[in-house]
Image (cartoon, rainbow, N blue to C red; front, top):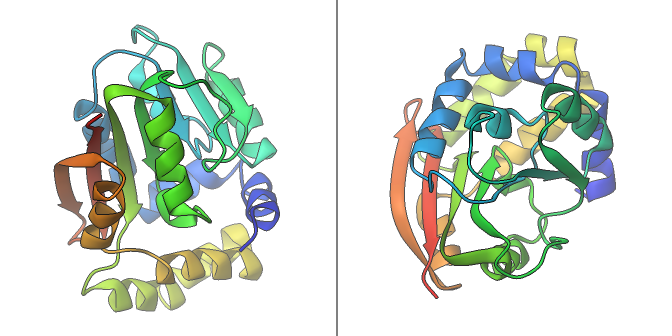
Amino acid sequence: MKYSVVADIFSQISRVYDRFLTIATMGRIHRWQRELISRMHSEGNWLDVGTGTGEVLIKLGESYQGSRVGIDPAFGMLLVAKNKCRSCYFVQSLGESLPFKEGSFKNISLSLVFRHLEDKRSFIQEANRVLESGGRVGIIDIGRFRGTPAVLFLMKTLLKPIGLLIFGRDKWSFFIHSVEESYSIDEVKQMFDSAGFKNEYVGKRLFGIIQILVFAKTA
């Protein structure tokens, strides 16, 4: 699905996105994001790709030692994010074409974003470029595993009324499609390994539906 369509969908749902995500994950998204943060460098410039409403950057806190920067193609999401975090910096941009100089960041995070990237290998190359040596990429995402068919079943049955009520049919169909396009842990590790990253952490949450991965730039 083209980014213009994705950006339009997320801009339209920007004001209800936080509430839905909290409901859909039974509040666990906040715990997962804090866990990801704990596995990253504790200071240095931080880039949140597909930042949405800026929740990861907000959880870093005002005392975080480094610039907090978020990018997203959905302008509506960025407006919400800026209202929530006035001291953060937000740019409308794509993960495959980062508008930053080489070595600008020590941390890059993606919370429920990686599977939405159109060209994942191009993003990984860009992450390698803008990270300092030893910098980390942290990912929270819905991964493909043996239970993926069950997740899709829930989205098409039990969660469907909530999804349709909040998002509408077209947008809910998009979220189902994004799960269908998810990747396994081994597939994600292979992408990063081939680009010169070392896998430092793998975590599985919510019966394996959610994967938390951290990679370090080795060169």
